[in-house]
Amino acid sequence: MLRIENLAVSYGRAKVLLDVNLAVNEGEVVAVLGGNGAGKTTTLKTISGLVRPRSGTISFNGEPISGLPSHAIAQLGIAHCPEGRRLFGGMTVEDNLFLGAATPAARKNQHETLDRMYELFPIMKERRKQHAGLLSGGQQQMVAIARALMAEPKLLILDEPSLGLAPKIVTEVFEVIHQVRDAGVTVLLVEQNVAQALGTADRGYVIEQGAVALEGGAQELLKNEELQKAYLGI
Ligand SMILES: Nc1ncnc2c1ncn2[C@@H]1O[C@H](COP(=O)(O)OP(=O)(O)O)[C@@H](O)[C@H]1O
Ligand SMILES: [Mg+2]
Image 1 (cartoon, rainbow, N blue to C red):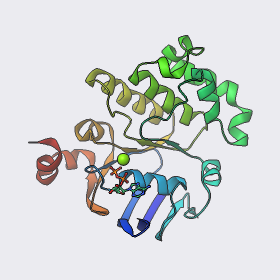
Image 2 (cartoon, protein in one colour; image 1 turned 180 degrees about the vertical axis):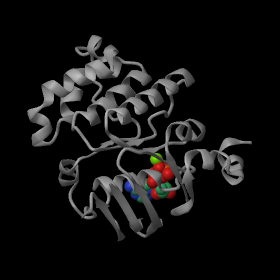
Image 3 (cartoon, protein in one colour; image 1 turned 45 degrees about the vertical axis):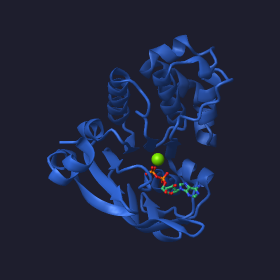
């Protein structure tokens, strides 16, 4: 579904991604792991068209998308749930959700999609008229995921959905990711929570110094000694 080949990205003179290669098959949950500053967010932003690549190619369902504007990439079926959630705290939960139905096709279905989101996240229905900024961190993360799903994507990109959340809430977030996949949406996920990300994902990639240092099946990666030493403290 998604294929990234020889991707290089710079911010000014700073080369952040040197040579990233990764692929996501339809129906998978794929985790991108790596330390702070490794280039994980940059990889996701480049897929979504928020950052332009210096070189390399990205294709989605066989079509090249690198260099397209972000709204065109959204229309092809990629939705991005950003690091730090980025909700509008002074707007209601429901108005935040409607903002996610940003493509013409999604806007046409937005009331039906909203009902599905309220089924997936019942607490959100209760809170729909409250300002998003008043919700707990975990609830805000659920709103951010639901807002991205309002675009009715084929591929959902999640940047550190568990960041800053209590362990119990982290588990709930990963359960939601399972449900999203079961509903037929492919998921590409960036996480620092390596154990839980690999517990949920089918496959994973570890990015170090701007390139993929390690890749494989999630269970295989969990048993990898290098990964255990670097990220799991084992
Ligand atoms: N807009 C930007 N301008 C300049 N440097 C940036 C920008 N965004 C990120 N960086 C730098 O690029 C590197 C990778 O950042 P990022 O992709 O956010 O890493 P990660 O998500 O893996 O923590 C870091 O060194 C970071 O400081
Ligand atoms: Mg990041």
